[in-house]
Amino acid sequence: MAGRPRIRERTDEDLDELGTILTRVHAEDGYPVEGVASPRAWLTDPGFLRSWVAERDGALLGQVSLADPEGAETIALWSERTGRGIDEVAVLARLFVSPEARGLGAGEALTRAVMEHAREHDTALVLDVMAKDRAAIRLYERLGWERLGDIVHAFDGSPGVPAYCYAWPPSAK
Image 1 (tube, one colour):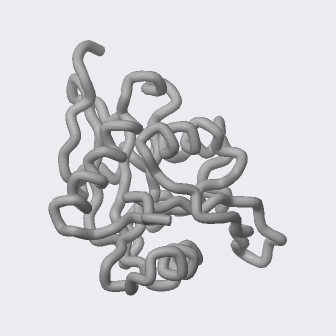
Image 2 (cartoon, helix red, strand yellow):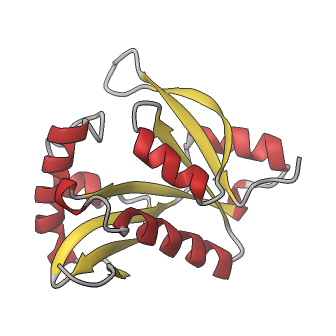
C-alpha cells in the first residue's frame, strides 16, 4: 500500500467490508466492548448524522461516524464545563481502524475529517473512550482534545468499564 489514506463519505456498499474489519478489531482489541453480534446494525445506528471511511489503494482501512448527542453521558460534562447547549455539539463515534492498517495514519485522518466538518459547521465535538484503549487516547490528546472527566460505560446489564470523556475544541477554563 502506497500513499496516504483517502477519506470519503461512507456508502452502503462499504458496510459488509467494514463489518468484517470491525469483527477483526473486536477480536484483537475488544472494541466495541458491547461486542459485534450485528456489525451492520452497530455501523448504521439511526442517531448517526454522517460517516466517513479511510481507504488506500481501493481497500477500506477504517471508519468514523458523527452522531446526534441525544443521550450521550459526555454531554452533561461538556455542557457543565462550557455552558453551551445540546444543539451546539455532536458526538464522534464508532472510530476504528483495521489491525493490519495501524500506523498508516487512518485513525488520525478520520478524526481530523470529523474535526474539520465540525469546524465548518461551528459545532463542538465530544466522545467517550474506554480507559483500556490507550492508542485512541494518545491520538485524541495529540490532536488537542480536552479530557472532561471519567464515566463508567455500562451496557447490557454489565457493571461497566471505565471510560474517559473528551471534548474538542477545548473549553476556556
